[in-house]
Amino acid sequence: MHHSNRRPLPDPFEFLPKGLTKLHSIWVGLTYPLASKGRNMSLHFASHLDRQKAARISLGDSISMRKDAWLNVATEDTTGEPVIVIDDNCHIGYGSIISAKNRIHLERDVIVGQQVLMVDHNHAYEDITMPILDQGVTGNGRIRIGQGSWIGRGAAIICPRGELTIGRNCVIGINSLVMRSIPDYSVVFGSPAAIIKQYDPETRTWRMGPYQKKTHQIPEALFVPVDK
Image (cartoon, rainbow, N blue to C red):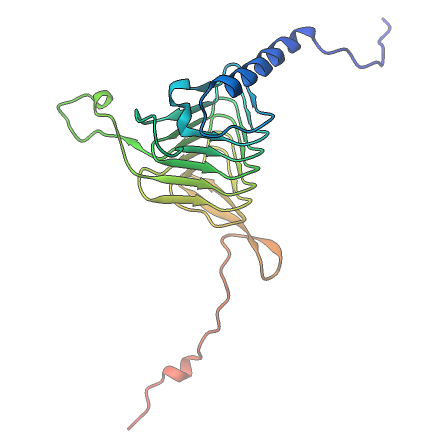
């Protein structure tokens, strides 16, 4: 049998979901009352955001949301400042959830892998006489993801209280659990996540483990007691 060396043509059915995604992106841009909306958005037709709460979401230029990605505004208050802010050129992977009651902010050029979870609140559970489902959400956390970072598949970033900041150009390893801030230029992995590699600005190289700034130590002889 003769095999042609020519590259096969794309499956024509691939154009159908691409066309639906294009139409959905235009529809959201025209009809959803977003706090701000950028240009060249690509929102998969099976991605999710609530039109009634769209005023609490801000989207920048050239962002993309893949299939089953969900931007969830976890408050019934449809007025006020945006609780989800996604800056320019961010990419949200398949099945990822960003659920915000207070504020989750992705700075520009952030990659969010598949099935990532980001949550700045928690379910109330303290009343043992009431189903947790009926107790609502609680917490006053805030999350900020630094410019140029990459959040790996299955990672969970959870901050039910306080501030959690992931620095610039960080890598969050697959299936990692992040519940505290991470400094710039760090690679973290594990549950809970720990720094396994970090950029050393003094030597301008990457090193294993967390960066520790060198300090000038005072000689121990200076602490020897003097006889009177």
